[in-house]
Image (cartoon, rainbow over all chains, first blue to last red; front, side):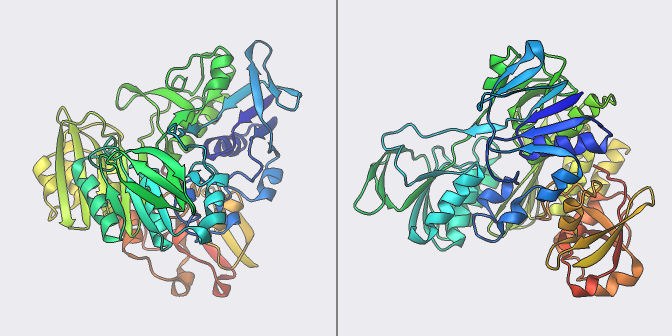
Length: 407
Length: 107
């Protein structure tokens, strides 16, 4: 008996921890291609980038923890193939390892620029530890930075660089930031917030090419601007890291397909985290979710199934983003909404509730943790909620849910 | 190093050595107190690091700020007057011997 976990980020490490917590007695091997101790990703674009978090505080667990829990950590080790027919994996160093159960926690890989000049050394990404370290090593040589991408990573990178006193230009290839993930009110709040901190936001603007300059680079944009920069940080999304699964003959479609127990199309192979496509029972649709919550909760589901205590996955998704002094917290999936309700306590503290076919499906809260928590707690099922009461800040948020849901 | 005692949901108690300057949450995570889930890593976003600090230690703690209070009062079914988010308690020399109760995780 043995369990091998490929990938030691949030999902993989938590799976190892949960296996032990649930009484798994046999060997657990946690394999990661990177050489550094397994680490948390959210601070890479925030506190760690801002030099406000020391290296060791980035680690998911201290080094001694893995020994105490009898978890074999194989760092700097790349898996080249999964051989599902004989339950083994092959490593880049030529060795192979046998497993009884395998957990794929390979995450996602960064989408790279393909425009002319994309290979220049001044271009940075933000996904892995080495990416943030690469920026930090150059930080004293950076005065002006162009950030490409209006998603969470782009916004957080821009905020962090501005906090460090850099002159930031943010290029967003749509009419507003976070265009795919939130509504106009939240986008506009962030646009205003970033502008108030001196960030130059250029909407509907693409980078067309990047060229080497006497000092740094020039970013040529679709509106014919030429922006001088000492560094470029790119945050244009990720794609699921599914090639190992695909080559092993597992079913993949925008991620490794798993059932409600995180089991793939092979009964001995599980998959969890950013790399996974699954049917969400609350939203009744196939989804792939990139978040710490998803990674952590799916690791519990997989560990339970492997320990013969199967419990179907049904966790409510939630997310957060910290930018400057603003705390955005999100519960649920707002995708496909047809109505919104605003609960505004002040210009800087509001919540947007998303509805679909009269049912509350998600909430975005800005500096309103109370509403986030109360809503998240009630989003274990989709219910109709009185919209007028939701909008009324004189009504306690918990009282809005209770009479209607009967909870 | 400081001695910190966690009393787990099954009443067993675990005493661990903590570093001054670390948060109580970090101490729990580093020492495998798995009931402290600490999903957000300590940025006061998720309330999965709920704990209850023994009465006689209250005067040694900085009171919760508004965000922590809001998370606690709305997240936890059985929030008690001594309920805290362990990510917001930073340990110093006065906390040597601190005793905290860890409830069963609600998440």
